[in-house]
Length: 463
Ligand SMILES: Cc1ncc(COP(=O)(O)O)c(C=O)c1O
Image (cartoon, rainbow, N blue to C red; front, side, top):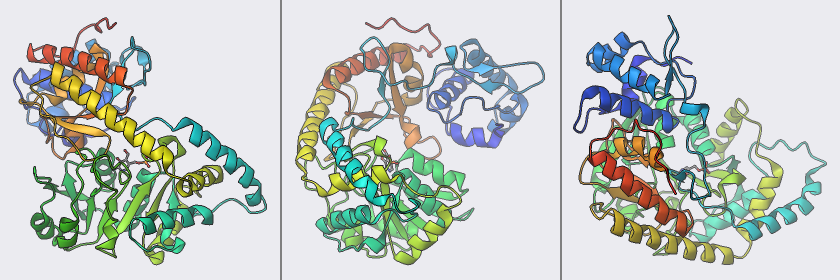
């Protein structure tokens, strides 16, 4: 697959931030895009001259950056063809790791499965499965028992909901993609929290929408600013419940005050991860026309791949129509298992939240000990700390960190146009010992960055 120079420039954002020569900043940022998976393996990069022109940089800058990437195994070249993306040794990025000698993945904010309850939910689901055997099994809205269970969840969050208002998807990301296909046309203007969830940025950018980021201030959402910007917009995508990446929760007063000037899509994937306060009331309680998406990924397990959309039945019918161009429904067994868990007692959830709270403390303590210069706000929920360094080093740190045995998601992934170069999102979903070790490795990587190293080393030996 070829990628144009302009697409690369968009992905690079403000790559020149920070000290050091331009070619090094460029190769670091390109390397990060490869490690993050944003530049897919096998992608053919633009020619040096085209990229230099699009970047407004010299050709020498681009050719030196490309050469460094070739030398370190991130690009393959052959005569008369474009340089293509590869990985050193051919390994996949972000290999999950369990053992201390291997890379620790701090780039994903998702908890492991609740083993026993999930196992027994699947056992119950298997028993119920034969009831579905006399039907074809293709159900673009999802099976009734799960739509009913999701509707009951909304009722418990103060929002009367009938199963007709629920469509089951293969995860919240799928819900987002389906709604984007249904609602968004090229050049539409979409309001976003800034920072926001990276795959949402990607989904809207792929749909050729124009993004209107509205900064989350230290106090949270700015209702006035959101109102003003949304007047000119076609859609607003907000994450009011334990926002990813900051973990903030939009206060009821702000929900009430908000009077958006365009349709609103709220992503409630994180809603149940309420660590220091109750689960918030559903956003659509205040704004009945809001479209909500939800997921079992964080409250139960990402591997279920179950999500949903709550919206007017007419809109859900349009989504279901369009869905057949992509997929023909969600696996019945996973839907049954999710329904068992959504309807069952919530006891495992409180044990899980207790554990996540303890892991948050472990991560905070490790950061205070090893990286005291990092500002670490305490989120009221969610699965990650949105941390701030005094200097704009995030991309360089993310580029070098794998050599110290840890992978992280750099701040600019969560923003538009290269913003958040001082931020790093650090999830607390790993066991305590891995969190402590990951921070130790991160501190070493940080030390290397502040010494001016660039990430083109032999991997450090990590014990
Ligand atoms: C805000 C937000 N939306 C959507 C998703 C994707 O969820 P799913 O795994 O259900 O596709 C995530 C996952 O981290 C998320 O944080």
